[in-house]
Length: 212
Image (cartoon, rainbow, N blue to C red; front, side, top):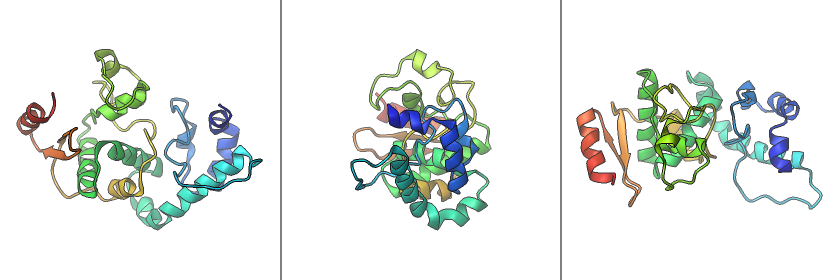
């Protein structure tokens, strides 16, 4: 509870924005559940027992910074901001398991954003309503109106922030989408393999085959 409180303290967050190049005012949005979601790099760390929460956060952000530093130029030249790219990467992380599929999912996200289509991705709904992947999503869940749920018919664009902590491979995929024209995809939940489609008809065929 103390950590969540500290990570939501806007005065503290502003000091972090000044300290780290990859943090922007986007994390101050009141609709974000957890402002540092996605930025606290998961790793094995060693701390003294009396280490402060602030120092733990600094060390995890330092680790994140060192991991994404090689992508800094590509991030700077992207039409999307760091926060948006990390949000994309978090969706990619939840939707696909390997490099090729992740780059394919990335391309679908870019394509849908370019076409002003809803992303319509269940993984954002799970996060929006605080459910675990695999839980049943009700009609009320899918229609819930918040800043994360891209399944809501009125939702356009990206969620307000990341929905998990993405791997470096997913971050790289967000910066390097595949060169295809897919607009849809379906994941086989038994194997994790992702299948892509360009048309409604192809998508409906995949749904009938892989979604119970």
